[in-house]
Image 1 (cartoon, rainbow, N blue to C red):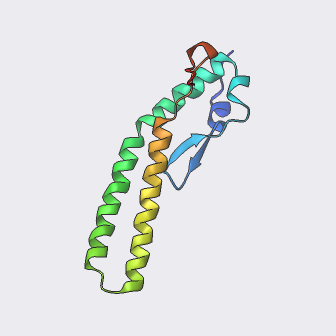
Image 2 (cartoon, rainbow, N blue to C red):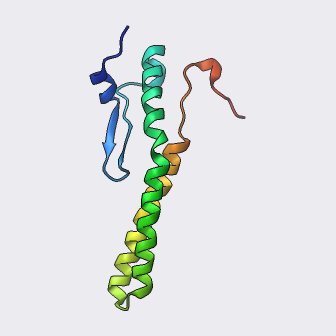
Length: 114
C-alpha cells in the first residue's frame, strides 16, 4: 500500500505559535498500520530535526527583548516586554517537549516503565 502525500499532510497541522507542523492524527496511533506509522515517523523526524533551529531563533528574540527590558524606563512597557519574554520562553519549552516526543512502530519496541 502506497501512502499518499495528501493523507500524510493531513496527519500534521502547522502551529503558528511554534513555527512547525505538529502531529494531528485522524485516528489512534495503534489503529494505524505499520506503513502508515512508518510514513508519519519519517515525516516527523524531518520536522523534528528543525526544532533546534526554531529554538535558537526564539532564544535570539528573547535576548533582544531582554536588552529592551534593560533599557526600558516605563513600567507598563516593561511589563509588556516581560510578558513577551515569558511567551517566547513558553514556546521554547513546548518545542523542547515536541523534540523529545517519540513514538514506536510496534508494541515490541515500546518501553514499559513501572
